[in-house]
Amino acid sequence: MLEGGRDGGGGRVKSLRAVGRGYIYIYIYRALAILSFLSPLPRRIPPTHPPTHSQHTHTHTSIHPPIHPSTRTMADSIPSEMRALTVPFHASPDRLQVSTLPVPSILLPTDVLIRVHAASINPIDVKKAAGMTRMLETIRFPFVLGQDVSGVIVRIGTEAGDFQVGDEVYTPLRKGGSFAVPLPSVMMALVMVHMRGLMLSDYFFLRFPAAAADYVVTSSKHLCRKPVTISHSLAAALPTVATTALQALTRAAARQPLGDLTGKTVFIPGALSGTGHIALQLAKRVFNAGHVITTASPGKIPRIAELLGEGTVDQIIDYTSQDVHEKIEKGSVDFVFDTMGGAQGYFSLVKPETGVVISLATVPSGEQAAAVFPETPWAIKIVLNLIDAWYQWRARRWGVGMYEFFFPNTETYAKDLEKVAWWVGEGKLRPVIGRTARLEDLEGVIAGCTEVKSGKGGTGKFVIELV
Ligand SMILES: NC(=O)c1ccc[n+]([C@@H]2O[C@H](COP(=O)([O-])OP(=O)(O)OC[C@H]3O[C@@H](n4cnc5c(N)ncnc54)[C@H](OP(=O)(O)O)[C@@H]3O)[C@@H](O)[C@H]2O)c1
Image (spheres, rainbow, N blue to C red):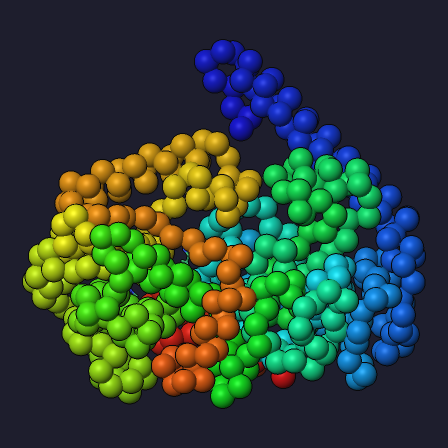
């Protein structure tokens, strides 16, 4: 950044100016942060109940947000502090730690406070912690890992729909959910919006998914009652992978001229991966696919029928020693749901004109990335659009009816999870957990997160238990 270059120092001056501008932002931000501590929002709305743990009342009073007068609370105690699985800076799982943070508070009438019983870890959680998305978004440290939770509502806003304190719920925390921090002044909110590329809805509260913590605040709009027949740990394994798989299969089934997936040939690699194991069950038992093909490493092949149910999968390919192009007839597959990032290699397997390929793990287009990560720089958007255009061109050359990278629509989460809970109750869908660890077992948590980050060896989901 500070190199002079051929202009004899002009580049350096420009760079220094840019650095100077950066410092001005930082100083403005720090000044506003100090002001925010001098005139904190909590004083304006007095709490309605006394803190239960008196030893905690002296800490975090300036940043611990208010309890809105119109909230309903569970009779038993809610502490002012909680445990959370964090990284102090961008780091790999071996730097994970259990930190003490203030319990987040309800800020909007639609919010609920959940006592988290279990949280599952997805690849994106460890990727974010490691800084792999840092060009697309700024994250706040300490960064709390996780976005999938199952737990019990312990406090509720006045407009939280049909939910009650005591309800057992599960949800994927996303934008607008979770660890809420009030921004104490309009000006600070505007500075943050400018610096972080936030959206209008984020003007007054910054919210971060933060599942692996004793408590989370989230919007009741994304919430669903947990399936009654399964534990919190199993329920926590579902939200992200089940909503993603359901939406992707629905999208493929709605694509004309494919029409639906009934009786069709579907190829979903990664039989016992997080998304793969759910997608395979949905494909066979909900979408009534005819011939379901998958891949797995040899050690996992004997476990597939036991874990997913007899007859869920019709053909299993050992991806470590066999070539899918030899095992699957060219041009015979109606739908490929690429959960492992090999979409391009599967184009030749797809039926010309009608075949659909949806990928979770290639590259989003610039517009898709910006919709999920509003801070995406324009240069990255251009690069992503070029890569996506190349994928589209390759897909067209093979005559693929539709190829696209897929991000789920967060607006339909609650409805999706209702369906998922119904299918779990009917026995059509069973989440698989390969590994669990209690939050206090940091070694176990690190081992689980390391496995998720490697993308190898895991079976189903890794779940952290908190209660
Ligand atoms: N776009 C989205 O919104 C979205 C949503 C969810 C997930 N994703 C992405 O989708 C990818 C998969 O997520 P996930 O949660 O399903 O991953 P995961 O559960 O962590 O995947 C690991 C599993 O995949 C198996 N595996 C690894 N390479 C394989 C291969 N080439 N063929 C078959 N199986 C293989 C591993 O077992 P073995 O080592 O024994 O083979 C392990 O069981 C990740 O990149 C994730 O970030 C994207």
